[in-house]
Image 1 (cartoon, helix red, strand yellow):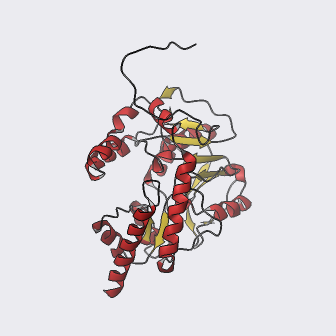
Image 2 (tube, helix red, strand yellow):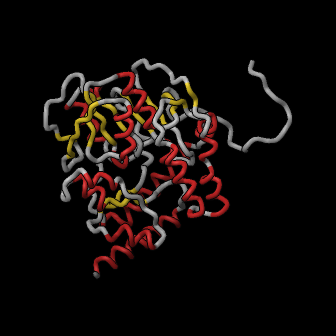
Amino acid sequence: MANKTFGGYFPLELPPAGAHYYPRARAYHSARGALYHLLECVQPQRLWLPRLICQSVIDAVVAARIDIVWYRLTDDYLPLFAMPFEKEDCLLYVDYLGQGGEQKEKLSRMIPAHRIIFDHSQAFYQQQYPALANLYSPRKFFGVADGGFLQTQIELPFPEIQDRESLHHFAHLLVQHEHGTSAGYADFQQAESALNNITARKMSALTERILRSVDYERIRTVRERNYALLSESLGALNAFRFAEAPVTGPFCYPFFYPTKALRQALIARGVFVATYWHEVLERVEPDSVEANFVNYMIPLPCDQRYSEEDIQQLSEIVRSVVTDEAKE
């Protein structure tokens, strides 16, 4: 039995600890660290990467000293193979905005599933597919500063080091409660920068404990409700082609509108939408699928922070901004 202390000060009050959403997954300091560890152990000849990818993934691949083969995306967000896929190659595919269920099934028929790495950073609730590995990034869905999960059937050595710095990167989560989101933004950026140190580390005890306290089913239900409300309100204005199957616990509501002015107009009205990923424009053609995604895809929030009334207000803002843009 582990030694237990009695008395003293109270810890942070959290709901009782349950199980992780993916109890068989390996818990890492970050998803990029998990990818780095996987590549170091598997050592594929080459890794096929989409041109539409965040820099942190590229950094993890470079750190693992794996050669990169870039692939374009078709209009349906499927890989376009410009050369043969060799048997010692691996391919990473991103489930973009959680809308890639059909694409993942098709891809698994195109190349061997055991050579595919599915990146579910934007699709936490999408269950694992038969593959070499499935990656998840819980901080993109829940209030934690770091953390990543790796689901794989192959034997990997456990990282020897556990992250001990996580507590220094939670400031923005506490400041937000006291002073609002804007006040914690500098601390948020600092926490994000701390993830740039790509190593194979176990998830911190703090992050793990918080994630064991999350009510995953409640959050999934709220996200799906808000997603449906946005779809009902904005669907007629939206040029995005959605997946036919329902999206489980959606990352966001993808709103595709072909004008660059829309994003800044929304931010000016207090709708702080992200850009995924601006650095991609440096390696793609201006009229490519990838460039259009970066320039015109607006990830509207539909997460557990928002009530039905909040979503109604958000819809009204988007409709108003779109109407103003159409007049100009």
